[in-house]
Length: 187
Image 1: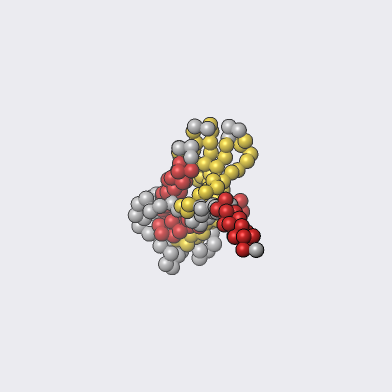
Image 2: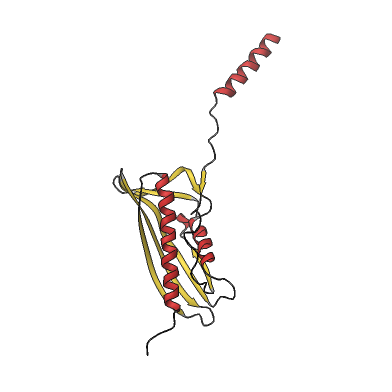
């Protein structure tokens, strides 16, 4: 009886060592530190949204050379938060949110790494922005933004390229808002 018990214990221990080990947790990324100090802060309330397919933490890519209709995600890498939330945090740091007079609404439309070939890739980021006067509800302006950033054809290229594209979008949005709110200098 003792022999059977020892054989069972040995079998259980052996089975534990041959079972696959659990996968390590995914590597988490954000956009890194801000690229530059904000321009003179304008009191703007910021809202960033994204379509459902983009409202998660996956880092997406597309193989244009083999299957352009299939959106894929890197398995072992994730954003710390959905890209819209990361971008919203960046924008809120760029604009003063105290007693805002304006509202900047940004709809993230596209944020992915695109492989043109197996050896070349770029980032595609598109966003629709609108600026409104909060007191009157009047639209001050609307604009489509598109940022393309060359990148290496791997996950590190996706992460660094996405961060650079997000910083470029942020700079363009800041400049656009300041231009929209600049006093008219015509005589």
